[in-house]
Image 1: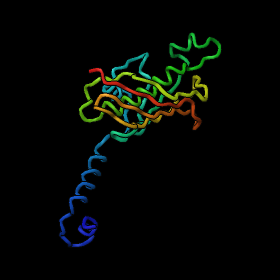
Image 2 (image 1 turned 60 degrees about the vertical axis):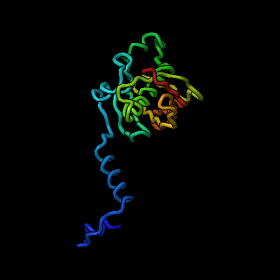
Image 3 (image 1 turned 90 degrees about the vertical axis):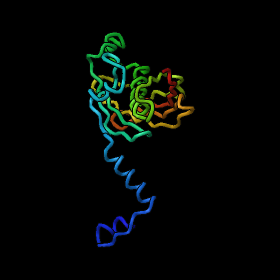
Image 4 (image 1 turned 45 degrees about the vertical axis):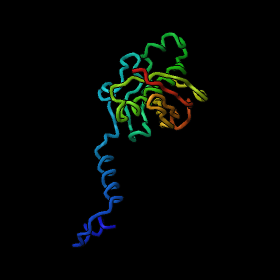
Amino acid sequence: MSILTKVNSTDTTTPTSTEQEATNETTITSETKTTLVSEEIQKLLPHRYPFLLVDRIIDYIPNKQAVGVKNVTVNEPHFQGHFPGRPLMPGVLIVEAMAQVGGIVLKQMPGFEDRLFVFAGIDKVRFRRQVVPGDQLVMTVELLWVKQRRFSKMRAIAEVDGQIATEGELMFSLIN
């Protein structure tokens, strides 16, 4: 590898195009922000309280995957009626939270920055563990495919304390 040789010696060999691509890829990756706080999430997603269900992105791989966190608190409005005396986070809101993490991946893809995606389908969703106030929901959403630059499908898993709470496949459609 001429790059290593160049650093460790006086060899002035020009890197091959493959080595240049690897170097460019490393540069792009190192410049890409891999974590996002609430204010940065709000610049990407149109959702706002009480429907913004992602508190933080703790890992982001461009065009591939994002890992988001939702801190579940008892003062969220849905717990007043779901269920009094035994608050449970509604499954549909867990799925929505996973979709919002998926939106972070889509909104940062080239050409999609100012576009709006909505649900086109929800497949193979299973609820495996209850989510209650005090839990921290960690959601990993992986892009499976994008078709015709209009439709996409993602695999999503939401966990609490390392246990799967919800998992499934989410499909999105570009509407503008």
